[in-house]
Image (cartoon, rainbow, N blue to C red; front, side, top):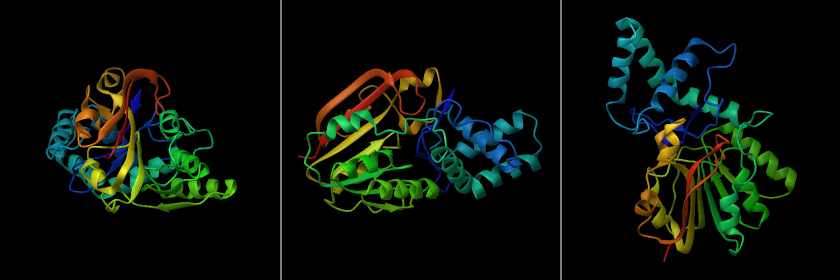
Length: 277
């Protein structure tokens, strides 16, 4: 069982990795070329790293792994070139395939915690970080929110816009990574971070929220990584979300068992709703 998170890997460039359920961060589909196989092998290996692949020595450690497997120096350098030069493209292609698959292998409905935390709020301006195919953004727009979402998976974003048009709601969407997006100052009444990397962007969120605005987060507890290979971006230690959002008022925090939106099996999940004073 392998899951991924939309967390950045520190390779001198940014690869946004997102949560994938069992069978999603899988071996390359039939007909995929050797570059995909090289990247998917590296991708799977990073899930075993507690840092989620963000440490600066990642490639050196992976070089040692390849050497221990008996690859020649030339083969090793080829693997690393594919990862560093084609990684972003291959990652986006992977997520486009996953998020636009005819039969979704993740929860394609709006996140239940987000629904619960927003049902009593007056609609305002909402930001969906790592919007994917728009399951949460479209739901919020249907409730009257003025929604902006971004994601580097261009085909998934296009699918979100198609769904919004079919349902007669409006979305503002951008094909961007989180390091490219301008969160702004006092822009948002609501920011959703549902199974996406939080640590990279948390420093922007307090400034980006309007006074009285809310952040809603859901991800995996560290315990979940004992039974599945989950990249570190959506894996949190006990009470870590409390610490990450200590400048906000914690409205609700849960450390519980439940069915994860990505993985779709019963595991330990953490959830947080916090408000800017």
